[in-house]
Length: 158
Length: 292
Ligand SMILES: Cc1cc2nc3c(=O)[nH]c(=O)nc-3n(C[C@H](O)[C@H](O)[C@H](O)COP(=O)(O)OP(=O)(O)OC[C@H]3O[C@@H](n4cnc5c(N)ncnc54)[C@H](O)[C@@H]3O)c2cc1C
Ligand code: FES
Ligand code: FES
Image 1 (cartoon, rainbow over the protein chains, first blue to last red):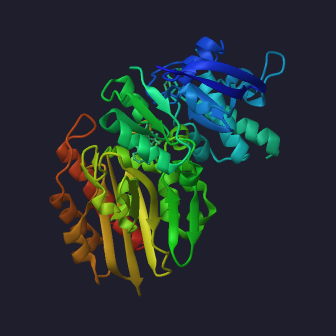
Image 2 (cartoon, chains in turn blue, purple):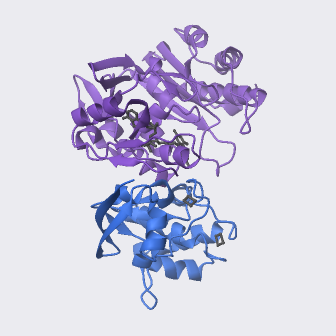
């Protein structure tokens, strides 16, 4: 099996790598780039723990080959905010009980970031729809919806 | 996942040549959301994966009032849902594409991949049949066009011949007097795939439907036009009783799938309920007013 040279931008940095063509994007991010914030859950496209942004659109990295993101711009949770300089969504998830064990959190953050980039002032129903590709076994979801709504409200002042 | 070669043709001609060269050992790859799962479960183990990723011309969505809408097979569900021309002229299609699966799958799965995989538990087939869509297929011998209703032939089986590639989907120009609705039913909000869906279009002649299309999907192996109910509804004003009668006919005429997500009897009831509701809604009635 041949490899493929890919070059992409991950969290603002340019990355060049040689990957096996059957390498999953989620494995590439975690095992080759050591970006372990992206989680592997179901690995069948259901749970959303592996969500990342590709060219600004949230996708499930377990349903993609690394070979497919050649030339693209990716954001993982590590690129959303950093310790000491967290993204408003990360602050809000902490403030509103948007997480307990935290395993699902990176995926929810990226799905929420995609939503707010297109729709800065969503209704609750729109928040729930935007997060419908992500599962959480701990929070019961309400804390997550509250966290997202709160970021929208604090940037919109209503 | 077994090993394979990942081929990235630059043109459709090159892609078709690769498909002819590697025949049964080759497989078209679009977004990969369906294929990767099948390959990881080793249901499919192609030696050559022919990625359409570089064929940008297959991504385009174009509209003109004389010819209608043309959607490239590589357009993602989210591209279809967000295209201004689709939103303006085909709101039923925009709503369907923007409501299926979940945001992540819509951002990666293509409409072509959805149709070619022919999984019954999907949304586009019934909606596209009700909108009189056609598909264009390129193959070693040239191009051919088929009505959408002839494209999916059975569970996971389409009319594609070996080596053929779906290039685009076309919809006739919108007609101001033609309206349509699409509705899907999920068992729980956490389940992405519909257990049943229904698409309805008709020409509204002073409140009376003509040229009715009523198509059921997901509950049946292949999305199906409900011809007996279509005839019954033609030239008949929709009341709650008419809606209930047509819905009962539809429930009787289908041969539902029975599996872990829903047994036959359950799916029949769901189909009856969503058909009654969509008809009531189309007529501006509240289905809750009748306890049928
Ligand atoms: C978690 C989840 C939930 C989902 N929920 C829904 C839902 O609610 N409703 C719904 O409708 N769908 C749903 N889907 C299915 C989804 O829409 C499809 O997986 C997707 O559209 C397939 O497109 P793709 O580009 O990823 O196809 P691929 O995986 O790349 O290809 C699928 C198949 O089609 C063939 N193929 C692809 N493109 C072409 C072409 N142009 N010509 C010839 N053959 C081609 C491939 O060889 C392969 O056999 C869901 C999927 C997942 C993973
Ligand atoms: S690990 Fe990708 S969706 Fe669950
Ligand atoms: S916080 Fe534990 S799964 Fe969501």
